[in-house]
Length: 92
Image (cartoon, rainbow, N blue to C red; front, side, top):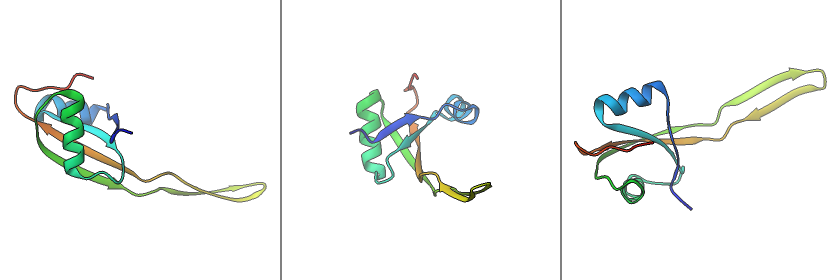
């Protein structure tokens, strides 16, 4: 059961990794910064300088259909932005 779920590969995240040496990951919602740092260092063999986390709440949606009102929601997520030391890089 890994703390890291998957890396975020978008235009913004790729530009951030090239310019600032920061990499983004989706992580477990219960994980803290110390656990995230240890997981990245163990998985990719880099030294982590800084960990920043963001929590996104669930999105609630309502849809009107022939059969009536349909309600739903997405799961809440947590992102981690990892800044690695100069000279280190993570290759996806």
